[in-house]
Length: 97
Image 1 (cartoon, one colour):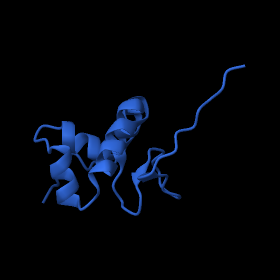
Image 2 (tube, rainbow, N blue to C red):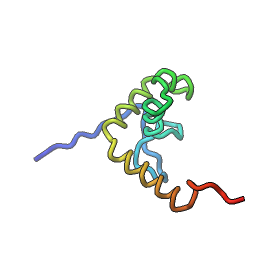
Image 3 (cartoon, rainbow, N blue to C red):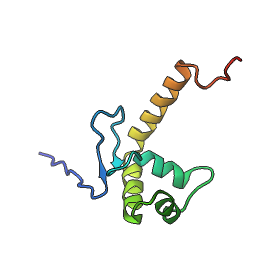
Image 4 (spheres, rainbow, N blue to C red):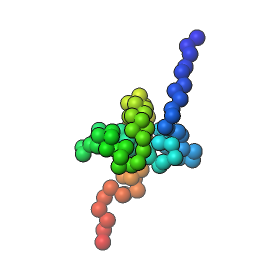
């Protein structure tokens, strides 16, 4: 019988009522994916810069990055769902004035 280990996070928590299944920084409206994209995106922050800019502990940034690395399929699925919703609502097209 295989045992499943549940990871306990010090700085991450689920957000009740959220449409996202990924975890958020505790007490903040910052998803783990936001941290990941800020550090690995086109104009990247260092983890230390992100911690300073958003006034969160560096350990929280590192924990969010580790979580995101281990949950990339979930994060990508949620990113794709969000992009599809934006497209379906026409929010990705210029408005007609």
